[in-house]
Image 1 (tube, protein in one colour):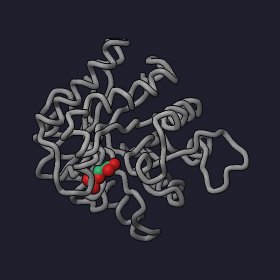
Image 2: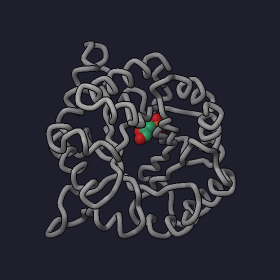
Image 3: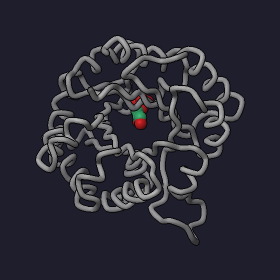
Length: 254
Ligand code: 13P
């Protein structure tokens, strides 16, 4: 069984006391957790170490939202994979559409970041997804194939054995407009099929998360689909009750 991963991408939100309270509330609400469901929070860089210490010994994991593709050196403002590992991260999000669109991250850069994460022993969460214009032009699969194959070409399929993939249609992020369970399932199945062409073992074990306006009231429908193995949650990860409602939906899909 692949189990579920429910991951909170906090993006550039919160500050010290608010983040601590949110983390404590998640920990209290989740308690011992549920078999087959893991929670993950991805706070902004400055809070990672402190929140990671709060999470120690719990069933909630720590991840970062981005990393540099470089190991060290004159890259002002950047943070390396080894540094993230050093402050206690297990996961790192790679290739979020906001970074592809706003920071100009190409699929080649995303592939380098994916490789850098693995090199430091981090588990990358590779984000893929199409824009509304691409969906309307029936380019969804083509776009996702390009985003996936750039990484497959760079690292090979075996590198995916510790990775997670997140399908995040750009048109569903922060818009309140979520993909229907069927729309998401279709793309997840396609992604699994692409991996299967390289390795059926890795394809079967790969957790493929859905992201884009996931809330407590739509998570259950999404998680009931056979190829949806959890969620990458933005807005609803900033309130403990909302995030825990999504986690509960995963636990009852067990
Ligand atoms: P929302 O849940 O706010 O739509 O954000 C999704 C996302 O981008 C998670 O990475």
